[in-house]
Length: 295
Image 1 (cartoon, rainbow, N blue to C red):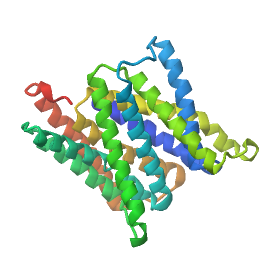
Image 2 (cartoon, rainbow, N blue to C red):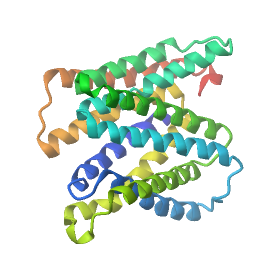
Image 3 (cartoon, rainbow, N blue to C red):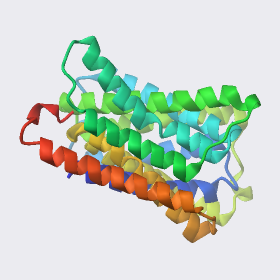
Image 4 (cartoon, rainbow, N blue to C red):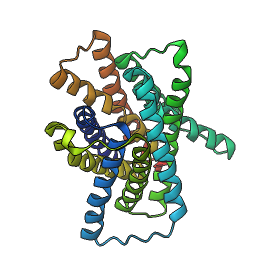
């Protein structure tokens, strides 16, 4: 069930990306980060109040680390988008699932713990292969620095997801985790916009303006779903399900923007879906025997 939260989160993030594509015709990247963050802060503040969840947290440093790593990863991804082909930037960012698997294996070896999740790790790698098939990334020699930044964005995202898992283990409510990440996003977006400047609203198209609030709400709901999935679900299964965002993005590209999907792209989508189904089947079969491996 928790894996389905990640699928829903991936759908919400893909829908948010559509909004960003429309809004980017009038707003700069830093502005979009700021508006996404500030709307999320307001939205999650209402949710916190409605659920009577206190704002004060017993683990402020854990939230600070999650927000710092998450916002830096987001900023690195935006930089990669600006300096690399979009498909390449997205592929490097979606390597987060591979990094999650690598960190889990590395941690198990470091502490001398037996690692029995090889098949699940295989589904993560299979899903990433599907991402590469769908996006078919390319990179030129003069884009190597931006490629490294894009690679770091995926690594940072993986660290943020693992920190979300840790917050879930100590009992932190998902809504509070999302709220503090939204605060970090708004702060970084505001600082960036001070350097790049805010677009006067008189110059903003009505289409772009109409997406400002939905982008923040969709980001909040997507983060909420993702946080719930990583907090309570099997980490590697959730990492594998994250790749479904590429499937939703491809469908949006075809339906809304008329972008062509090559046969190898459709094959990649099939591989992504198959990896998610396989990961869920493997986890369901192993669950009765390995209850301690949920995270």
